[in-house]
Amino acid sequence: MVMVAMGSSEAILHVFYGAAPFIKSDSTCSLGSLTKYKKKSGSNAIRLFKCSSIYHQFPTIPTIRFEKFKNTQFESFSCKCQNAESVSGFTTENENGTWFVDNAKEFNTIQETGHPPNLLGSEDVHEFKKESESSLSDAIEKEAWDLLRESIVHYCGSPIGTIAANDSTSSSVLNYDQVFIRDFIPSGIAFLLKEEYDIVRNFILHTLQLQSWEKTMDCHSPGQGLMPASFKVRTVPLEGDDTATEEVLDPDFGEAAIGRVAPVDSGLWWIILLRAYGKSSGDMSLVERIDVQTGIKMILKLCLADGFDMFPTLLVADGPCMIDRRMGIHGHPLEIQALFYSALMCAREMLAQEDGSADLIRALNNRLVALSFHIREYYWIDLKKLNEIYRYKTEEYSYDAVNKFNIYPDQIPPWLVEWMPNKGGYLIGNLQPAHMDFRFFSLGNFWSVVSSLVTGDQSNAILDLIEAKWADLVVDMPFKICYPALEGQEWQIITGSDPKNTPWSYHNGGSWPTLLWQLTVACIKMDRPEIAARAVKIAEGRLAQDKWPEYYDTKRGRFIGKQSRLFQTWTIAGYLVSKLLLANPQKAKILMTDEDSELTNAFSCMITSNPRKKRGPKSSQKTYIV
Image (cartoon, rainbow, N blue to C red; front, side, top):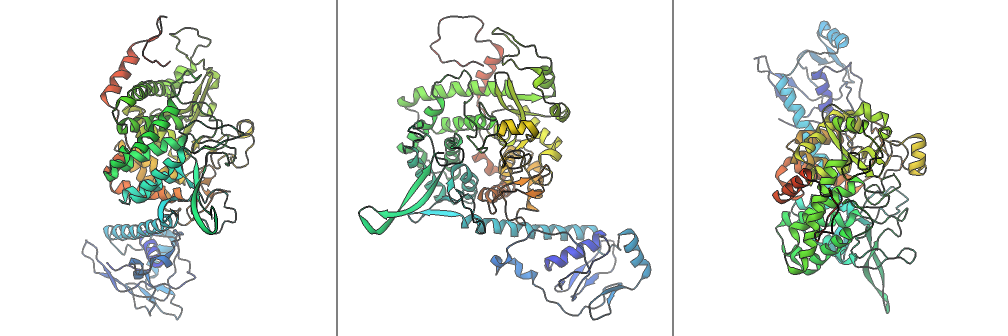
């Protein structure tokens, strides 16, 4: 079948589907060369010829930067207008190319019912529409790859990462011209899926070199092993020679960031990407390097260090992850716990079995068991659990207390009572003494599925909830970073009246297209890819047209974010990773981790026994309160 001009194809489709009465187009389009269609019922072939103009009405389609696609399949979309001949019931009788209908009865039918005569067989129309959508999708993917490659940063002639955003129209760059570790993850995965390994390998090794840098904030240095939030390639004069220059990497550990937030998730993402690189490329020599093994151990020792906290979850300040502003997630936010568990699982695979690692591996295994038990038991919420909390007794003092964290039933928010579906559940956002954050945080729930932090039944229940609450979590643009948004006095108190995190904007209930790739991995793991495919199709209809924004605002995600950067790299990369994984689901295994039998057995033992029934001498084996 010969391809036709994109605008004209949409117009013809609307004739076939029964669109509203036509409105004259401002531009002249061509139907291209002769195209034949034949109904299977045996009717005569309908011939569509070239025309100089068409009356049509059709929705806006995504804007594609066609100037980049010369010498591609889009040459077949060129407009070649000629005089039109008669078309089975239609004739062009004036010099303006206005279409008239021979049969007044047919014309009245179109005007009154909006259903014109069925010119093509339903299967022909479906195939035609499918090919048009496929061509458009291919165009969007090509633009996305072009933009992703334009964002690549080089250091000493080699690719080392991608900048956060590449919007040439923005006058305020801030730190969006830097390479962020968390932002590069979808970019790195996209390159791995394309078997372009050098940029990921370079990124891993150069960020590892930055890990040991000494940075201070008010004369205080962070713990050894902390990974930077971002870095920038700078050109500086060569010491001792003003005529020569050299390139240096300048890392930011949070001391220059808005709010001076140190990143907890950078090192966790680094370990996850390192494992994905090894499984994708087959190059285990990188993982086995002494400096890489040392880097893994430094991150683990920092995360597993003893402190004052009694819980196996990781205690952090506000804003240590994707949500890097004050949003009331300080304490034990789900996103950090999911990434922490995933990084522990990945590190256990990669750590060399040697005498020096024995104690670290033992502590790692103990933490995995305690962490999985803690999250599955106390972070999980569904209708049954919600009713249990509703009937909680408080002020219980004993090792056998049911309400271990002294949660007051009045904390259950009114919105949750109506919002919780009969089928499905999710992990709450945070848990601390006398406090449960009942908000739904997307990344933490997605990655809990990917990493097997939750059980198989809980994983399916999370996807059930997403389907049941599609109108709240997706609507016009996937995916809500959290739900619901903080509003009114609650917003003022918890965010400090943050003008960027206003209700249903940015981190406060905004929609982030980059979350598509994490949703896709979770859906593929649970053999439910149709959920992710549905979300990708929604996003695909707007992302290129809207110039790949960082985030969307409003409850439905209809507006581009008020301070959203355009041509945001992880928006572009997240879309590409989703498309690549849906086309080849087997490749998603580089990101997944499965619970092994040892952890399952240990978890079962913890459920069936109470480790603190009686007091006694301190055990030689390390224990965690659960």
